[in-house]
Amino acid sequence: MSAAGKVFRYGDNIDTDVIIPARYLNTSDHKELASHCMEDIDRDFVKEVKAGDIIVGGRNFGCGSSREHAPIAIKASGISCVIASTFARIFYRNSINIGLPILECDEASKEIKAGDMVSVDLSTGTILDETTGKKYQAEPFPPFMQALIKAGGLAEYIKENY
Amino acid sequence: MTMTEKILAHAAGEREVHPGQLIMADLDMVLGNDITSPVAIREFPKFGKEHVFDRDKVALVPDHFTPNKDIKAAEQCLQVRQFARCECISNYFEVGEVGIEHALLPEKGLVTAGDVVIGADSHTCTYGALGAFSTGVGSTDMAAGMAIGKAWFKVPSAIRFNLAGKLGPMVSGKDVILHIIGMIGVDGALYKAMEFSGPGVENLTMDDRFTISNMAIEAGAKCGIFPVDGRTLAYLRESGAKEPKIFEADADAEYERTIDIDLASIPPTVAYPHLPENTHPAKEGKDIAIDQVVIGSCTNGRISDLRAAAEILSGRHVHEGVRCIIIPATQKIWKQAMHEGLFDIFIDAGCVVSTPTCGPCLGGHMGILAKGERCVSTTNRNFVGRMGHPGSEVYLASPYTAAASAVTGRITDPEDFI
Image (cartoon, rainbow over all chains, first blue to last red; front, side, top):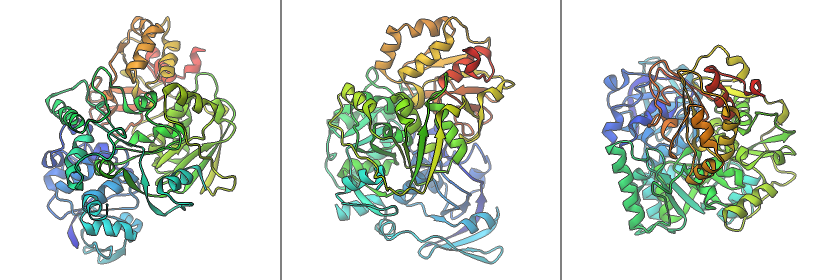
């Protein structure tokens, strides 16, 4: 599994209210949610994002509410991977459960710049900033989560095992 | 082992667990609301189970956009209602019975000490006040929980908060948790358990503890848990909860760090926009004029919160141009406040009293902010756009501070009213 695209860069503590404001939570339609993704901090995101693009955040990405609508909106907007220094725990679980690839890598989170072209090998966690030529290695997922991802998400994993 | 580790070990059928270990734990309650349940209900068939694992261990609480704020919200509530009927869910609460989930479940005796609870709502960590392990998850986890009655957890390491002393007058649990978040930051307890202990615990009311546990997530924590004492047991008896399972941290339990907190030293505290860690003593806010005050939510909509607000508002009036919205968290609290005469005080003071709803806390309805408006709120988050326009501002505070600020029209230390 791999991903490649242009980087949208955001800071620390990007919360679920800016990823998808609660005023749009009266729907769970993926496309509708995606059409408002990040709008309270970046009105241009929705206009500019293309399939495959990558979000790079800082610390505690996805903090706040448990709304699964947040990773759903990001995934449905075309983002192929989110790289951050750390993720808030519910966002982390939700992303794995719905199949939005996420990688924790402090160095990449600090160094990769907005607009850089980045490619990611999701099976190894290798991140390549094609603009600067620098390579990064993300934290590997524990085996249990790898099994979850491999099964295609939580529903498939549970159907197979319970 | 820590208290959290002991509860998780018991629920996973293990003698011992260690931080970092991945476990499958049995669940005592699976919770969802009108925003998160529709997504879970849509996912549920994918788990290959015909029905929910136990109709008494699922709680569906449509509290966010209710009474239905618009057609789309009404349709989401309809989906939840239909699923609840179809699955004969015992703990479904219609408007008229419904209250804010994290005030409602403890009040109805649906959580007891030692339980393991997941909820598709980040403030599910509230039940740590009862000595339960409870944590927020997403809708897919909720669907899995409804299907098999289990959830996976990475056993968290823990930070111990050693509480000593007594809170000063006009200082409450909200000031304690804001003070702690200001100290450790919004990711200060990321992936970890916050365990509260020490001689100061007995001086905290159950409502103080609910507020403190409720905002553990605002420090990134997986749970915020209190030891079980006489106050907990009295609360559980009164609510008709199941027999408590009491777990205590071992004397040699390992914590990542211990933080000593002197409750007497905590001033009325306010978190400025746009992060709960951005805390200041309330007395520094004199120059900040406000447009609205909200007193309510899963954090501060309980009876002692309303009494605190009434103590300040009694015989006074909200400042000209300030809107003060008061939201009792449940029907029981509403009735109690009415019988105690608190509504007379609120209405005479120029406040409006709403039916139970999460409404304004997350910018849903019942008190949305316009561009440039400022609100002092007893809710839990002050992110950009949280209560309305992205150009509005939310200042988080206790009911005492919020009520005092409503009277003066500026952020005000309630100690000025003593």
